[in-house]
Length: 553
Image (cartoon, rainbow, N blue to C red; front, side, top):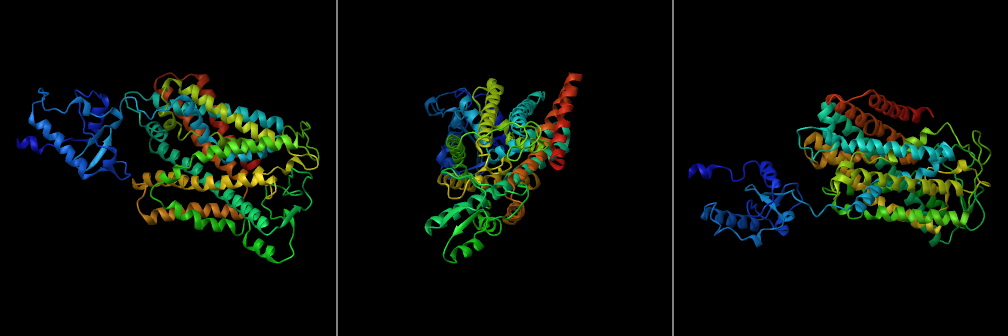
C-alpha cells in the first residue's frame, strides 16, 4: 500500500497526454474533466482552481472503492465529457487539454483559403503600383505571375517538409524544428534570425505607414476644422478626381521634404501647426507614446480580436481603387524599351525592386504549417494553398495594374507613382481619408501582435520564457521602436524597406532552406536525381540574385 501511495498519480504529464490521445473511448479511459470556468490564467499549462481539485479527488475516490473490473461505482457514461472538453489533471495544479479525435476547431477549406489570404495581405499591396512602375507595365505583370508560382512551390516544399521525416511524430513541429533536424543548430538559428528579419521589417514598415496616415489624418481634420482651403501648387490634375505628384522633378526613391500643397490662411496658426505636425520630424515620435506601452503587454490576445479589420481594410482598398479607376479612366501607351516623357518603358532594368517586394508580399512560409494544421480536410492542403496563392496574386494584380493604368499621364508622369499609392491623392480626399484612418487603426492593433511574435521567438529561444522580465522586454521594444522611428524620420520609403527585408528573409526561408532540406531528404532516401538537384540549386541561386539585385539595380 505504501508503494502504491508513493507512486506519482500521473507520472510524466506528456506521457499521459499521449496515452489519452491514442484513444478517447469513454468506457476504457476516463481522464479527469475540468470545466472551462475552472481553468484560470492564460499560461500554456493552465492553472486549475481549488474547486476542480476537489472534484478530481472525488473521481479518484470512486476509483479506489472498486476494482477495475467492477463497473458499479464508476461514474456513468453520460457524465463523461465530450472529447474536446477533456483535460488531464495533475496534482501539481495544472491541466493539459487532450488533443485527440476530430477537433471542432478544424476549419473547412474556404475558411483556410481566406485565412491564408488575410494573413498574406499586408502593406505590400500599397506598393504594387510602384513596383510595376519600377519593372515596367508588361514585365511587372509577368514578374508578379512568375514570383507567385515560385513562392507557391517553395511554400509547398515547407508544408511537405515535416512529412519526409521517418519514425518521428512531427505533428506539432514547425519549420524551425525541421531545419534543426536536418541542419542542426545552424538550421534552427538561421531560420529564427531570418524570421525575425521579416517581422522587424514589417514593424518598421508599419511605423512608417502609421506616421504617414496619422499625419494626413491630422492634416485633414485641421483643415476641415479651420476651414483651410488647399490646392495643388503645380503638379496635380484638374477636375473632381485630383491626383498629385509629390516629387515632380526629383527621384522619388530618395527622401526629400517638399511642399505638396499651397495653403490659403490669413493667420499664423497654420505655420505653427506645420512646425509641430510634420510627417517626418514630429509625428513618428508622437507614436512612441501610443505604441510603446502596448508592446509591453504580457498577452496579445486583446489585439488579436481586431485582426478582422485587415480583411475590411483590403476590401475597402479594392472598392477605392475600383471607384478611382471608373472616374479617372485608363491612361496607357506602350514604349517597350525606352521611357518617354510621361510613360515608362514596358521592360526596365530596375525590375529586381519588384521581385524584392513580391518576396515579402507572397511570404507566409514561416507559419504555413500552423495554418494548415487547422484545415479539416488535410488531403486538400495543396489545393487550398494553391487557391489561396491564386487569390492573393489576383488581388495584387488588380490593385497594382489598375492604379498604374489609371494614373493620369499626361499631364503627370507615371514616374510620379509613389511607394505608397495613397500618397498620390491629396489629404483632402474624403475616400482616401477614410482609407488612411481605417488602416491607421488596423495597424495600431496589429503592431503589438508583431511585437509579441518577435518577443516570443527571440526570448523563447534565449531564455525559454516569452516574458523573462520587464527590463528584457522593454529594451527589446526600445530597439524595435527605435528602428521604426529612425526609418520614418530619415528614410520613409516603404517600397525600399519592403524589398530589402523581403529579399533578405526570402533568401533563407523561401529559397535556400526549403530547397536544401528537400535535397538532403531525398539524398538520405537515395532518391535525389540530377534534374531535381539542378532545379533546386537554381532556386537557391535565384534567391541570391534577388538579394544582390536590390543593391545594384
